[in-house]
Image (cartoon, rainbow, N blue to C red):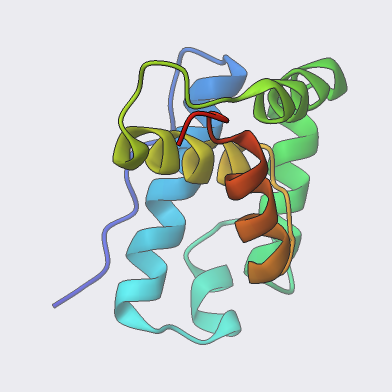
Length: 118
């Protein structure tokens, strides 16, 4: 079985690129490829998948959009959503905003943003 990289989005907007990046990452993780194999799937020379992601993110995701995603994560709250919906939305926002934090920090964020009534 061979890993298939989804076609690159032609729309050129930041959200499309981030969704594409997440799909490629999931595909590559399923097959547990080493760094050189991941990179060989690309035409231009790059040393690692992280380097490729960084290059593409710099090219297709403007700084203002990165700030927007981070601010969206900071403003996220439970509201009328179920806890499952809120947790899913928070996890997607963390991935899209490219936030790297410990599990403890994520748990603290989750608990802080829950409604006070719970």
